[in-house]
Length: 222
Image (cartoon, rainbow, N blue to C red):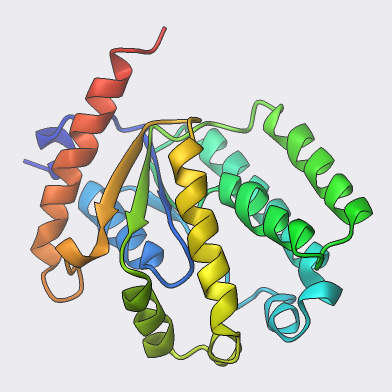
């Protein structure tokens, strides 16, 4: 029996994986999607024309980067809507606006006019019919030191050159954000409690929890 059927996960479910940079979202996304035979919606890092420039100069490129991410994320939202679900998504659109754009505005690396334009664009997008909310958001959490080790291990030069204070600030903002997030059910996972690369069979434990969360949350929907 397939894991999706075994744990009663709907064919049209949308599962989103959230968490700070380097915490393992892509690994989780691919593992869960493979286990459920779902499509993936992945963050396009290698083809992003602004990412390297952004890490070199936050103030000059933060607005360009966030608008690019917003456009790409919206296209993925539309694709999920048109397919009718059955997706695992790497990073949510909520993180773009509630963490990244907001952080750069508050730290002075995105000016008020650009931030207002960005938030108005986001608000307009979420009011369209192409914006299915996730059935469950998997929030990956773990010790800050472990996350930094993972960032260093994957070796992206632009991340290696980023000050530690930037990652500390983002870590704190993610922690505050998830405690107030209520757009969909949240399933928290500690990254120290599994290792999908070394022990891929552990994905079944995660699938079982996803099925439970979706079933429980459906009881409270109108």
